[in-house]
Amino acid sequence: MRSMLKTTLAALATTAMIAVPAMAEGLTGDLKIFLDTSNPAPRATMEDMIARFQAKNPDLQIETTIIDREAYKTQIRNFLTANAPDVATWYAANRMKPYVDAGLFDDVSDLWKEDLFATKLAPSKAALTLDGKQWGVPYSFYQWGIYYRQDIYKELGLSEPKTFADMKSNCQKILDSGRKCFTIGTKFLWTAAGWFDYLNMRTNGFEFHIDLLQGNVPWTDDRVKATFANWRELIDMGAYVDNHTSYSWQEALPFMVKGEAAAYLMGNFAVAPLREAGLDDSKLDFYKFPVITEGVSDGEDAPMDTFHIPAQAKNKDNARAFLRYVADAENQTIINKQLGQLPVNADSSVADDKFLQEGSPMLNAADGVAQFFDRDAPAEMAKVAMDGFQKFMVKPDQLDRILNQLERARKRIYK
Picture 1 (tube, rainbow, N blue to C red):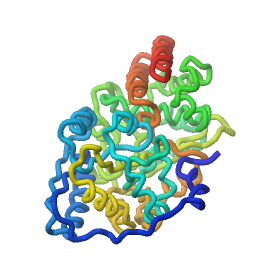
Picture 2 (picture 1 turned 45 degrees about the vertical axis):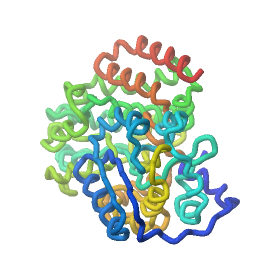
Picture 3 (picture 1 turned 30 degrees about the vertical axis):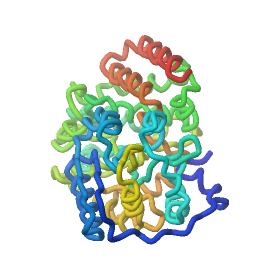
Protein backbone atom coordinates (compact mmCIF):
# COMPACT_ATOMS: atom_id res chain seq x y z
CA MET A 1 0.00 0.00 0.00
CA ARG A 2 1.20 3.49 -0.70
CA SER A 3 0.07 6.84 0.48
CA MET A 4 -1.76 9.40 -1.61
CA LEU A 5 1.33 11.55 -1.25
CA LYS A 6 3.44 8.80 -2.71
CA THR A 7 1.26 7.41 -5.47
CA THR A 8 2.29 9.80 -8.20
CA LEU A 9 6.02 9.39 -7.73
CA ALA A 10 6.28 6.46 -10.11
CA ALA A 11 4.25 8.21 -12.75
CA LEU A 12 6.54 11.19 -12.46
CA ALA A 13 9.32 9.48 -14.35
CA THR A 14 7.18 9.31 -17.45
CA THR A 15 5.64 12.74 -17.15
CA ALA A 16 6.37 14.99 -20.10
CA MET A 17 7.58 18.26 -18.63
CA ILE A 18 7.28 21.72 -20.00
CA ALA A 19 10.02 24.24 -19.37
CA VAL A 20 9.45 26.51 -16.40
CA PRO A 21 8.16 29.91 -17.44
CA ALA A 22 9.86 32.83 -15.79
CA MET A 23 8.16 33.79 -12.52
CA ALA A 24 5.92 36.57 -13.79
CA GLU A 25 6.71 40.02 -12.48
CA GLY A 26 5.54 43.41 -13.61
CA LEU A 27 1.97 42.21 -14.09
CA THR A 28 -0.77 44.72 -14.82
CA GLY A 29 -4.55 44.68 -14.64
CA ASP A 30 -6.55 43.22 -11.77
CA LEU A 31 -6.41 40.23 -9.44
CA LYS A 32 -9.32 39.49 -7.12
CA ILE A 33 -8.58 37.01 -4.32
CA PHE A 34 -11.08 35.39 -1.93
CA LEU A 35 -9.67 33.75 1.22
CA ASP A 36 -11.19 31.64 3.99
CA THR A 37 -8.14 32.15 6.23
CA SER A 38 -10.00 34.20 8.81
CA ASN A 39 -8.17 33.03 11.94
CA PRO A 40 -5.45 35.50 13.00
CA ALA A 41 -2.29 33.51 12.14
CA PRO A 42 -3.36 32.26 8.68
CA ARG A 43 -4.91 35.64 7.87
CA ALA A 44 -1.63 37.43 8.62
CA THR A 45 0.30 34.82 6.63
CA MET A 46 -1.86 35.22 3.53
CA GLU A 47 -1.80 39.01 3.80
CA ASP A 48 2.02 38.96 4.02
CA MET A 49 2.25 36.63 1.01
CA ILE A 50 -0.04 38.82 -1.07
CA ALA A 51 1.98 41.89 -0.03
CA ARG A 52 5.18 40.21 -1.29
CA PHE A 53 3.46 39.35 -4.58
CA GLN A 54 2.18 42.93 -4.80
CA ALA A 55 5.75 44.24 -4.29
CA LYS A 56 6.88 42.21 -7.29
CA ASN A 57 3.96 43.53 -9.32
CA PRO A 58 3.41 47.15 -8.22
CA ASP A 59 1.15 47.95 -11.19
CA LEU A 60 -1.20 45.05 -10.47
CA GLN A 61 -4.44 46.01 -8.72
CA ILE A 62 -5.01 43.33 -6.08
CA GLU A 63 -8.30 43.15 -4.20
CA THR A 64 -8.41 40.70 -1.30
CA THR A 65 -11.56 39.56 0.49
CA ILE A 66 -11.31 37.47 3.66
CA ILE A 67 -14.46 35.60 4.68
CA ASP A 68 -15.09 33.82 7.96
CA ARG A 69 -14.06 30.19 7.45
CA GLU A 70 -17.43 28.65 8.32
CA ALA A 71 -19.37 31.28 6.33
CA TYR A 72 -17.06 30.69 3.35
CA LYS A 73 -18.18 27.06 3.19
CA THR A 74 -21.79 28.13 2.69
CA GLN A 75 -21.04 31.05 0.37
CA ILE A 76 -18.57 29.50 -2.07
CA ARG A 77 -21.09 28.12 -4.55
CA ASN A 78 -22.87 31.48 -4.72
CA PHE A 79 -19.74 33.55 -5.31
CA LEU A 80 -18.28 31.08 -7.80
CA THR A 81 -21.55 31.41 -9.74
CA ALA A 82 -22.44 35.08 -9.40
CA ASN A 83 -19.38 37.04 -8.25
CA ALA A 84 -16.34 34.95 -9.08
CA PRO A 85 -12.92 36.13 -7.90
CA ASP A 86 -9.80 35.28 -9.90
CA VAL A 87 -8.38 33.04 -7.16
CA ALA A 88 -10.10 31.34 -4.23
CA THR A 89 -8.94 29.13 -1.37
CA TRP A 90 -10.54 25.71 -0.94
CA TYR A 91 -9.57 22.08 -0.33
CA ALA A 92 -8.26 19.09 -2.26
CA ALA A 93 -9.77 15.67 -3.06
CA ASN A 94 -13.53 15.06 -2.98
CA ARG A 95 -14.12 18.44 -1.36
CA MET A 96 -13.48 20.16 -4.71
CA LYS A 97 -15.55 17.65 -6.71
CA PRO A 98 -18.95 19.43 -6.50
CA TYR A 99 -17.40 22.57 -8.02
CA VAL A 100 -15.48 20.62 -10.65
CA ASP A 101 -18.63 18.70 -11.62
CA ALA A 102 -20.61 21.95 -11.79
CA GLY A 103 -18.01 23.55 -14.05
CA LEU A 104 -17.16 26.21 -11.46
CA PHE A 105 -13.40 25.52 -11.17
CA ASP A 106 -10.98 26.09 -14.04
CA ASP A 107 -8.88 23.19 -15.35
CA VAL A 108 -5.28 24.07 -14.40
CA SER A 109 -3.65 20.96 -15.89
CA ASP A 110 -1.49 23.32 -17.97
CA LEU A 111 0.23 24.50 -14.78
CA TRP A 112 0.91 20.93 -13.68
CA LYS A 113 2.79 20.26 -16.94
CA GLU A 114 5.28 22.97 -16.03
CA ASP A 115 8.54 21.84 -14.45
CA LEU A 116 7.84 23.52 -11.09
CA PHE A 117 4.64 21.55 -10.55
CA ALA A 118 5.64 18.31 -12.35
CA THR A 119 8.77 17.89 -10.25
CA LYS A 120 8.58 19.83 -6.99
CA LEU A 121 4.89 19.27 -6.25
CA ALA A 122 4.49 15.84 -7.83
CA PRO A 123 3.54 13.89 -4.67
CA SER A 124 0.53 16.14 -4.13
CA LYS A 125 -0.78 15.84 -7.70
CA ALA A 126 -3.17 12.95 -6.97
CA ALA A 127 -5.03 14.98 -4.37
CA LEU A 128 -5.69 17.72 -6.95
CA THR A 129 -6.69 15.33 -9.75
CA LEU A 130 -10.23 14.47 -10.80
CA ASP A 131 -11.12 12.84 -14.11
CA GLY A 132 -7.45 12.94 -15.11
CA LYS A 133 -7.19 16.72 -14.80
CA GLN A 134 -5.84 19.05 -12.14
CA TRP A 135 -8.12 21.67 -10.56
CA GLY A 136 -6.00 23.55 -8.05
CA VAL A 137 -2.59 24.18 -6.49
CA PRO A 138 -1.63 23.22 -2.90
CA TYR A 139 0.22 25.57 -0.57
CA SER A 140 0.32 23.67 2.70
CA PHE A 141 -0.56 20.51 4.55
CA TYR A 142 -0.41 19.47 8.16
CA GLN A 143 -0.53 16.49 10.43
CA TRP A 144 -3.29 15.51 12.78
CA GLY A 145 -2.59 13.82 16.08
CA ILE A 146 -3.07 14.20 19.80
CA TYR A 147 -1.73 17.37 21.39
CA TYR A 148 -1.49 16.97 25.12
CA ARG A 149 -0.55 18.70 28.37
CA GLN A 150 2.91 17.30 29.02
CA ASP A 151 2.94 18.82 32.52
CA ILE A 152 -0.28 17.02 33.47
CA TYR A 153 1.04 13.72 32.11
CA LYS A 154 4.22 14.16 34.22
CA GLU A 155 2.19 15.06 37.30
CA LEU A 156 0.16 11.85 36.91
CA GLY A 157 3.11 9.68 35.90
CA LEU A 158 1.75 8.99 32.42
CA SER A 159 3.65 8.33 29.20
CA GLU A 160 2.55 8.71 25.60
CA PRO A 161 0.24 5.74 24.83
CA LYS A 162 1.29 3.33 22.10
CA THR A 163 -1.89 1.21 22.18
CA PHE A 164 -5.61 1.81 22.71
CA ALA A 165 -5.33 -0.04 26.02
CA ASP A 166 -2.61 2.43 27.10
CA MET A 167 -4.81 5.28 25.96
CA LYS A 168 -7.77 4.11 28.04
CA SER A 169 -5.56 3.43 31.06
CA ASN A 170 -4.14 6.94 30.85
CA CYS A 171 -7.64 8.31 30.44
CA GLN A 172 -8.91 6.65 33.61
CA LYS A 173 -6.05 8.17 35.63
CA ILE A 174 -6.79 11.59 34.14
CA LEU A 175 -10.47 11.22 35.01
CA ASP A 176 -9.54 10.15 38.53
CA SER A 177 -7.58 13.40 38.88
CA GLY A 178 -10.75 15.39 38.22
CA ARG A 179 -9.96 16.30 34.62
CA LYS A 180 -11.38 15.25 31.26
CA CYS A 181 -9.16 13.24 28.94
CA PHE A 182 -10.02 15.15 25.77
CA THR A 183 -11.45 18.50 24.86
CA ILE A 184 -13.53 18.81 21.70
CA GLY A 185 -16.06 21.22 20.25
CA THR A 186 -18.52 19.55 17.89
CA LYS A 187 -20.76 22.54 17.13
CA PHE A 188 -19.58 22.52 13.51
CA LEU A 189 -19.46 18.68 13.39
CA TRP A 190 -16.09 18.15 11.65
CA THR A 191 -14.10 17.70 14.83
CA ALA A 192 -16.06 14.51 15.56
CA ALA A 193 -15.10 13.29 12.08
CA GLY A 194 -11.44 13.50 13.14
CA TRP A 195 -12.17 10.97 15.88
CA PHE A 196 -14.02 8.70 13.48
CA ASP A 197 -11.16 8.89 10.94
CA TYR A 198 -8.56 7.78 13.46
CA LEU A 199 -10.67 5.19 15.28
CA ASN A 200 -11.66 3.63 11.95
CA MET A 201 -8.14 3.70 10.46
CA ARG A 202 -6.69 2.18 13.63
CA THR A 203 -9.48 -0.42 13.98
CA ASN A 204 -9.75 -1.50 10.32
CA GLY A 205 -6.79 0.02 8.45
CA PHE A 206 -6.30 2.79 5.92
CA GLU A 207 -7.58 0.86 2.89
CA PHE A 208 -10.84 -0.08 4.60
CA HIS A 209 -11.35 3.52 5.71
CA ILE A 210 -10.95 4.86 2.17
CA ASP A 211 -13.20 2.10 0.80
CA LEU A 212 -15.89 3.12 3.28
CA LEU A 213 -15.62 6.80 2.34
CA GLN A 214 -15.78 5.90 -1.35
CA GLY A 215 -19.09 4.16 -0.77
CA ASN A 216 -17.82 0.61 -1.24
CA VAL A 217 -18.68 -0.67 2.25
CA PRO A 218 -22.08 -0.62 4.01
CA TRP A 219 -22.22 1.52 7.13
CA THR A 220 -23.96 -1.42 8.82
CA ASP A 221 -20.88 -3.62 8.27
CA ASP A 222 -19.63 -5.30 11.46
CA ARG A 223 -16.21 -3.72 10.96
CA VAL A 224 -17.77 -0.25 11.10
CA LYS A 225 -19.66 -1.28 14.23
CA ALA A 226 -16.32 -2.35 15.75
CA THR A 227 -15.01 1.18 15.23
CA PHE A 228 -18.01 2.67 17.00
CA ALA A 229 -17.68 0.10 19.80
CA ASN A 230 -14.15 1.39 20.43
CA TRP A 231 -15.39 4.96 20.32
CA ARG A 232 -18.15 4.12 22.79
CA GLU A 233 -15.62 2.89 25.32
CA LEU A 234 -14.20 6.41 25.50
CA ILE A 235 -17.66 8.00 25.56
CA ASP A 236 -18.85 5.72 28.36
CA MET A 237 -15.73 6.52 30.38
CA GLY A 238 -16.65 10.20 30.22
CA ALA A 239 -13.47 10.98 28.32
CA TYR A 240 -14.78 14.08 26.52
CA VAL A 241 -15.69 17.49 27.91
CA ASP A 242 -19.37 17.99 28.67
CA ASN A 243 -21.67 19.98 26.36
CA HIS A 244 -19.22 19.76 23.47
CA THR A 245 -22.00 20.41 20.95
CA SER A 246 -22.04 24.00 22.22
CA TYR A 247 -18.43 24.74 21.27
CA SER A 248 -16.46 25.43 18.11
CA TRP A 249 -12.96 23.97 17.98
CA GLN A 250 -11.59 27.32 19.15
CA GLU A 251 -14.07 27.53 22.02
CA ALA A 252 -12.89 24.09 23.17
CA LEU A 253 -9.27 25.25 23.51
CA PRO A 254 -9.65 26.86 26.98
CA PHE A 255 -10.45 23.49 28.57
CA MET A 256 -6.94 22.38 27.67
CA VAL A 257 -5.32 25.74 28.41
CA LYS A 258 -6.83 25.79 31.90
CA GLY A 259 -5.87 22.17 32.54
CA GLU A 260 -9.48 20.98 32.74
CA ALA A 261 -8.81 18.58 29.86
CA ALA A 262 -5.49 16.89 29.17
CA ALA A 263 -5.46 16.50 25.37
CA TYR A 264 -6.98 17.47 22.03
CA LEU A 265 -7.17 15.39 18.82
CA MET A 266 -6.61 18.14 16.28
CA GLY A 267 -4.61 19.42 13.32
CA ASN A 268 -1.33 21.20 13.82
CA PHE A 269 -3.06 24.55 13.35
CA ALA A 270 -4.11 24.25 17.00
CA VAL A 271 -0.52 24.76 18.18
CA ALA A 272 -0.42 28.51 17.50
CA PRO A 273 -3.50 29.43 19.58
CA LEU A 274 -2.43 27.06 22.36
CA ARG A 275 0.99 28.71 22.52
CA GLU A 276 -0.58 32.17 22.38
CA ALA A 277 -2.80 31.15 25.29
CA GLY A 278 0.28 30.39 27.40
CA LEU A 279 1.15 26.74 26.77
CA ASP A 280 4.83 26.79 25.93
CA ASP A 281 6.66 23.70 24.67
CA SER A 282 7.44 22.57 28.23
CA LYS A 283 3.69 22.10 28.74
CA LEU A 284 2.57 21.06 25.27
CA ASP A 285 3.54 17.92 23.39
CA PHE A 286 2.24 15.62 20.65
CA TYR A 287 1.78 11.92 20.00
CA LYS A 288 0.61 9.79 17.11
CA PHE A 289 -2.85 8.25 17.55
CA PRO A 290 -2.24 4.84 19.20
CA VAL A 291 -2.56 1.40 17.61
CA ILE A 292 -5.91 -0.33 18.10
CA THR A 293 -5.68 -3.42 15.86
CA GLU A 294 -2.18 -4.80 15.41
CA GLY A 295 -1.19 -5.38 11.80
CA VAL A 296 -3.68 -3.15 9.99
CA SER A 297 -2.30 -0.57 7.59
CA ASP A 298 -1.26 2.68 9.20
CA GLY A 299 -3.08 5.80 8.02
CA GLU A 300 -2.81 9.45 8.98
CA ASP A 301 -4.92 12.51 8.28
CA ALA A 302 -2.98 15.27 6.54
CA PRO A 303 -5.38 17.75 4.92
CA MET A 304 -4.02 19.85 2.09
CA ASP A 305 -4.97 23.52 1.69
CA THR A 306 -5.30 24.74 -1.86
CA PHE A 307 -5.91 27.64 -4.22
CA HIS A 308 -8.23 27.41 -7.25
CA ILE A 309 -9.13 29.54 -10.25
CA PRO A 310 -12.89 29.90 -10.70
CA ALA A 311 -14.13 29.10 -14.19
CA GLN A 312 -15.71 32.55 -14.39
CA ALA A 313 -12.57 34.43 -13.29
CA LYS A 314 -11.89 37.49 -15.44
CA ASN A 315 -8.09 37.62 -15.03
CA LYS A 316 -6.90 34.05 -15.47
CA ASP A 317 -3.36 34.91 -16.65
CA ASN A 318 -2.77 36.94 -13.50
CA ALA A 319 -4.38 34.16 -11.47
CA ARG A 320 -1.98 31.58 -12.94
CA ALA A 321 0.98 33.85 -12.17
CA PHE A 322 -0.21 34.08 -8.57
CA LEU A 323 -0.53 30.29 -8.31
CA ARG A 324 3.06 29.91 -9.59
CA TYR A 325 4.12 32.26 -6.80
CA VAL A 326 2.09 30.26 -4.28
CA ALA A 327 3.91 27.08 -5.38
CA ASP A 328 7.39 28.64 -5.26
CA ALA A 329 9.79 26.92 -2.84
CA GLU A 330 10.93 30.07 -1.03
CA ASN A 331 7.37 31.29 -0.64
CA GLN A 332 6.19 27.93 0.71
CA THR A 333 9.04 27.90 3.22
CA ILE A 334 8.00 31.34 4.47
CA ILE A 335 4.26 30.81 4.65
CA ASN A 336 4.44 27.37 6.24
CA LYS A 337 6.86 28.59 8.88
CA GLN A 338 4.29 31.25 9.71
CA LEU A 339 1.35 28.84 9.53
CA GLY A 340 3.10 26.15 11.57
CA GLN A 341 2.41 23.67 8.77
CA LEU A 342 4.31 21.61 6.23
CA PRO A 343 5.28 22.87 2.74
CA VAL A 344 4.26 20.91 -0.35
CA ASN A 345 7.16 22.01 -2.58
CA ALA A 346 9.98 19.45 -2.24
CA ASP A 347 12.62 22.20 -2.26
CA SER A 348 11.07 24.07 0.66
CA SER A 349 12.38 23.74 4.21
CA VAL A 350 10.39 22.45 7.16
CA ALA A 351 10.46 24.96 9.98
CA ASP A 352 12.57 24.23 13.07
CA ASP A 353 9.52 23.54 15.20
CA LYS A 354 9.21 20.46 17.39
CA PHE A 355 5.68 19.64 16.26
CA LEU A 356 6.50 19.91 12.55
CA GLN A 357 9.71 17.98 13.10
CA GLU A 358 7.63 15.18 14.67
CA GLY A 359 4.85 15.39 12.10
CA SER A 360 6.93 15.29 8.93
CA PRO A 361 8.55 11.86 9.51
CA MET A 362 5.28 10.49 10.91
CA LEU A 363 3.52 11.30 7.63
CA ASN A 364 6.42 10.03 5.55
CA ALA A 365 6.27 6.69 7.39
CA ALA A 366 2.49 6.22 7.05
CA ASP A 367 1.07 3.55 4.75
CA GLY A 368 -1.60 5.97 3.62
CA VAL A 369 -2.45 9.64 4.00
CA ALA A 370 -6.09 10.72 4.05
CA GLN A 371 -7.27 14.27 3.41
CA PHE A 372 -9.89 14.22 6.21
CA PHE A 373 -13.40 12.77 6.39
CA ASP A 374 -15.25 15.69 4.80
CA ARG A 375 -12.67 15.92 1.99
CA ASP A 376 -12.47 12.19 1.23
CA ALA A 377 -16.23 11.55 1.27
CA PRO A 378 -18.73 13.29 -1.03
CA ALA A 379 -20.03 16.48 0.56
CA GLU A 380 -23.59 15.19 1.03
CA MET A 381 -22.38 11.95 2.61
CA ALA A 382 -19.98 13.86 4.85
CA LYS A 383 -22.77 16.10 6.14
CA VAL A 384 -25.08 13.18 6.96
CA ALA A 385 -22.26 11.18 8.55
CA MET A 386 -20.90 14.05 10.66
CA ASP A 387 -24.41 14.73 11.97
CA GLY A 388 -24.46 11.07 12.94
CA PHE A 389 -21.04 11.23 14.64
CA GLN A 390 -22.11 14.17 16.78
CA LYS A 391 -25.37 12.45 17.67
CA PHE A 392 -23.50 9.26 18.57
CA MET A 393 -21.19 11.15 20.93
CA VAL A 394 -24.26 12.46 22.78
CA LYS A 395 -26.59 9.46 22.45
CA PRO A 396 -24.49 6.33 21.77
CA ASP A 397 -27.51 4.09 22.38
CA GLN A 398 -28.88 5.32 19.04
CA LEU A 399 -26.02 3.75 17.07
CA ASP A 400 -28.16 1.28 15.10
CA ARG A 401 -30.55 4.03 14.05
CA ILE A 402 -27.62 6.27 13.07
CA LEU A 403 -25.90 3.56 11.02
CA ASN A 404 -29.14 2.67 9.24
CA GLN A 405 -29.56 6.34 8.35
CA LEU A 406 -25.99 6.51 7.04
CA GLU A 407 -26.51 3.34 5.01
CA ARG A 408 -29.66 4.75 3.40
CA ALA A 409 -27.66 7.88 2.55
CA ARG A 410 -24.82 5.78 1.08
CA LYS A 411 -27.21 3.94 -1.25
CA ARG A 412 -28.75 7.24 -2.40
CA ILE A 413 -25.56 9.31 -2.76
CA TYR A 414 -23.18 6.80 -4.39
CA LYS A 415 -25.66 5.25 -6.85
